[in-house]
Image (tube, rainbow, N blue to C red; front, side):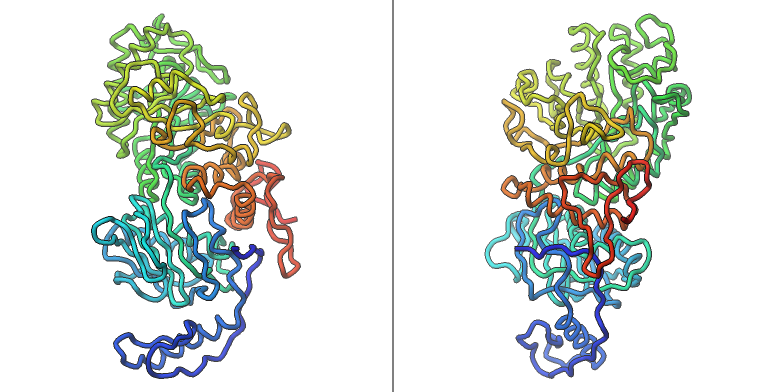
Length: 593
């Protein structure tokens, strides 16, 4: 059983070092270390090791249990006798690989503000004391093995990692830098909540001892941010990327175009941004990303091993484009700018070759700016396009995407169109029964699951939620968690499910605080469904583990909804009130009671 989380930070009183005993390493794991070559270490090293050992004997257990991680790891083996305390002189040691070193730098950047420790990053081959990151694979099968766990270790693949915590070190081992970063996010959660403080905190930075072996269930785990209905600047998008990376989500789908606004500059069609981007829901100023802005978003995401999936919604949801370029409209007349929230009334002319020249130019430029493999063409709610013309349009658009070297993604309405190699349908239905999508899967399509009544994060939590919709029903945290992507859609086997995505449409969402209010605490629920093996899914366990993240979000200044079904901490052991979540989405962060 993992230890219960108790909020608050405990400090360790100063202790005198225990005199070191020369000779071989003692059986007592908390005793002072000796040089493995048999030479007696320097007196200063012995003193530091003895001081740490004495402090560990007097210190309480780590305040977080090894099994308190979200998403739940594949395997957790606690060792209560092996807690690690981060010393002030610790370094981050990393394999001599530039990508691995970048992850090590991110780890140091995450820990420096709260600890106040310098945490230099050094190229050194683990094993080592302190914090160590290692790119490593066992010969033959790509698995990672270590002396702390008997028996074979499952193959970790492209995103898995192993985390070993002993009294002397925390070691993260993975076959890829992405795996190392996922291990870093787990380590971050195993430290006390005060690690999220932007300023130094006097604390014992303890990590619970033991071993975690972990890898994702599905390769695609993401969230969507609608920047078309309301425009959000680069800084807001980067903050959302940080939230995704924290919970091991690896894709950010940006809904870049819609009736209310066009949000990315296209050199060949400049009016898309200057005219089409000048509006948003409610009549605000709108906005658009320059090519440099978009590159910054893509680069920031890539450093955190998050892939950006751009969506250019076609052939419907195009009023902003038609306002800028009326020659693309069926009647050749520019419609007025649209700032409402209805859907299904606009579309590109599917019978005009100028439409396909436009689509090729736009998708070509966006593809060239996007290093990831995916290009999303939308395809939903084109209600005024006849079915045969719609199918012809989708098939030509799929060919244009293939010509850019990308793989096409579309909302599940594209299912009846002819199959394209590798194509992916994003399913957002609510019934779990969609014969057209099941047939597309039989023809070779894969599916990203975004069921509206479980994964749409613009749905209200409860009837009194101040923003959001309820057309798909109310989606509280338990409902967001309570489904299985592997069996959810009839006729779609688990091996055809590429992954899960949590969309956030923004008709009623106008600020970063409101984005966070709708994302949290439901985003971690969807993250666990995408990452954790099915056998770990347990609502009682999840709600307990999730509760410990409230103090972390509060400390980091993150807005979140105080979902009543989550047992948030109330009072810390010192009698001081511990953080509780914000009750309104307009607040920049949670207030103390």
